[in-house]
Image (tube, rainbow, N blue to C red; front, side):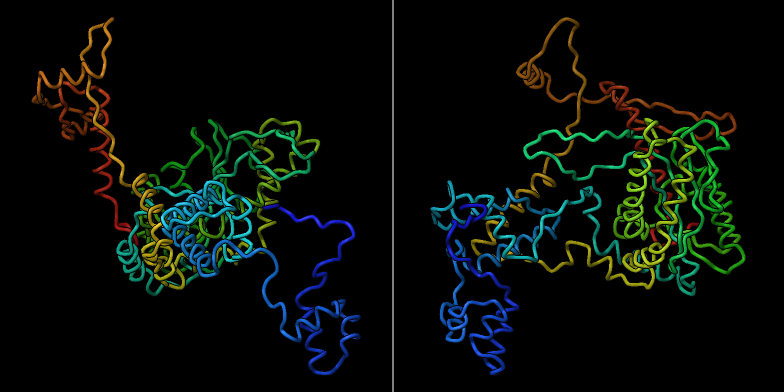
Length: 515
């Protein structure tokens, strides 16, 4: 099957008119506004075509008929959408192999397909015949995010609705931290056909600068808070930035409990102080849950609300509708700056240049940030309160079913294989320390023989005491069970797990204010 049909020289042009012109031509003739000859000259439609259309001759589509019927292709398209909704979208190769599995189960051999596997041209034609389908880049989400159920969302929305009762949209805020990188990204460029490596000279690095953004349900964004990765803060790093922007630094370049507390007191508290009850919604990071912050929230009638774990991609307004257009605009500004004579001199983005670029970025977002933020709150179901916005994005509520025919079975086999490989795999095996004399080697057969000879070994447990580093808190201890055959690394993992369980037990429920 050729990718593009080339017309031979001297042959007549085929269908050198649009469907709209053809219908207008036929309408003019049927209403007796024009003769056939006049309509043919006016709309540039051949008279033979006009006669055939008026007599309803040659009504079938021109060219070789499709391999599959219209109903079969429609079923293929519906199943592709279904698999994408379940979180296992198909790539073109997967679609070809699924179609091949369907043909083999049906016992059909298609001469046009090599080894009964469709080619790239068939996939391209299939996508053209079904404009509701398109090829896009998929966003990878973790397994824990895919395990969110409707009961989790309903519990969160029940608590959120009670907490936000009586608070106007101008007092409902969402905060989130993000970063702006020193990489403008890649763009498509014009080059010689067949070139394997097309290079663009542009300095870039993996460095990033952290920022805290916060806005309310009416679309108002409060001043930005910038955190540099440095030991000290210099005056030139704060000049030329957006009005009322505050700057700080940490050794890691990320927000910790100290910088979050400083942002809360110097930026957010000044924004909402004295305006009545308000709500502050954000993720449940440990660095955000600060005793002093919670005390200040209680004093100023601020509801400190945590989002459910692993749901920020559907419940965080800034993540949903604000950060993506902002980072796209940032890459454009950074690319333009790196093309200048001044910008091309630096291998990385200087911190004294960043405030001025940040000011240009905020000016560029001035006309769209209000609408984007309002759309984010609506999509997250926070304002107006609408839990269905979140439930519709869960796979279990998309009302997608696979037909129990041969087509559905072919796609169902693909889905089950993906789920088994991704979800049904065995867990991480528990490792054991091997007693091997120095200089000796060991094989798998020796290991199996040793396990048969010795049998199960009873673990002799002992208690390891980890005392507090403070003498005033010597009565606080953690007891860890450690096997004699276990390694020191295993004991450290147990201590970390105990601390993680303790933190998780003390975390507040999502949607409820922290006390």
